[in-house]
Length: 246
Ligand code: URA
Image 1 (cartoon, rainbow, N blue to C red):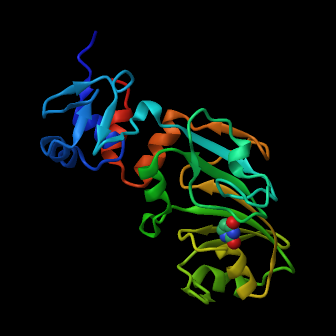
Image 2: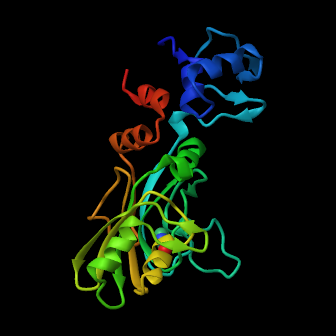
């Protein structure tokens, strides 16, 4: 049997900070392996051993799952809906508990990531991540070059001016919009602010993740390469190193 991997590497991948920060957790006696307090220098087999931090089970990479869903119109992005509507969780079959990363409006379609990796989810949705999200927006009328310029440069919304966006006209009444923020109903409000209400909105990219072949309502697991590119995009460098096959 191989000697396993360093405990701090496993913990860093599970989202407990840098390897150095995880060494401190271990030296403070806050980490247990199979119920015994861990020591610096311990090596583990995360698939076979129970690792806890402050008494709570650590989500090690071996039990992290990452799904990509093409959300259809009319499905809600919540864990459960008191009104009994279909939720994004109803559309993804996972043996472990997962949650959506960020949200799409009920009437917005397109790509949504679901995972149990709280650290990646936090970093992807944090305003400072600046992750690009690309949308195709069908709008009323046909925006003029001046309206498109306003969308690009920033429009005044009730919660402040929007950051610069990449906006191009695909065809009459169809815009491709890339934003780096994630405010509530942002694309719809931006378009309305320049006089063109959105009639259909589809998210086509989240940072490095795209999939034009995934049909509405379908989901699939992200590949290891896609997970690594996402981690790279949010600066999870320790975790990328530990997803490399040894
Ligand atoms: N912008 C919106 O207006 N709605 C979404 O669902 C996502 C981005």
